Length: 515
Image (cartoon, rainbow, N blue to C red):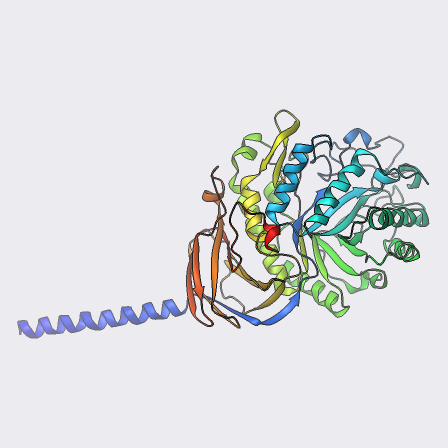
């Protein structure tokens, strides 16, 4: 009997072990799978990925807040943080460092921002040589020599000579549309034909005009009264055509990822691209709206851009200098959000992404900067420009490996709310897969590619505890030889962004050399 009981016990344990192995096999096969079809192109991006780089520098005293304006912004940072992040043009060493950082990041699509006051402060009077215009030229020269596409953005006019009587010039719609249009066309003609910049691919007339969740472009002090944007788009298109400038206009530049409403779109004939902003992250609901925008743009044979992305709740109000110096976990949370916005956007057909922002003081409306140009404590510009480490590397993990005009290929839907991924073929034939694990738990995934030859892939990553270290280097953490349809198992740390790519790029190399 003892032997029979022992035999039963052994048999029972054996059966239990088989069950455990079987269950383990079920769990393994049910883990997150990313299936990528590299021979199934979805669309080719009309742009790339970059960050806002403004040329506006004159401080707040140049904003007219006279009591005569019944409708006015009378706060210290009435221009948000679209100014003041660049050092004076006389600081040539600092400017060179800024340009070097842009090259290292591989920014390939820049929203370059200016105001009409910079180049036409008075009616009929153009100024091409002031310091702000010199800053604009520096930015465009960098873009020109680094093959970056420029989305030229007039943020506002801010000229009294063409504003409505009781509306502050900063937020006023142009009183004379022909004068407004002639000014923009003259600027573009100067930059393209006289200065010879070929990098300017798009022109946008005004930052966040009415039509989205809020906007400026006012013609009356009565709240809720504003002028329509469409007549201005029509007039500027006419003025550009008269100067034989074939650069397309982008619009409507609405915020904040506004619900799609075809009834509001009466300007399609005058634009060559659609663009909107997103500042609260793209959840499932916002993703559905973004898909509607993308489908509309595709139907009208035009690209859709997210010309500003960011997370206001994660960076606005965080002004303590010590957090800027050391890197704060909030910054990584914002990087994760940026990555999700980009991956969700690519999944529906968005053609370019612009992060707010590249240079930024960090003490105006939040710490948006990728690099440190401004000393928050001393209120002066640094002589040595360094990365804002967590934000910088948290964005670089995408910008360094996803160049402009890449082709997005098919990725099957992922059944895991924590994991997002998209894959592109670059113009040079490289393959890059960006993988985001936004959860606070480690995740294991299986990745399978078809439509490729056996290739060497390099795994790069950005996680909080590594990128915040002072000696961090963005070098590959692993190398794989991937065969068609073979399974690759990857363990993704919590809150991490990965680039699995055939681009072999070491930390010491600027990304632009790999385009």
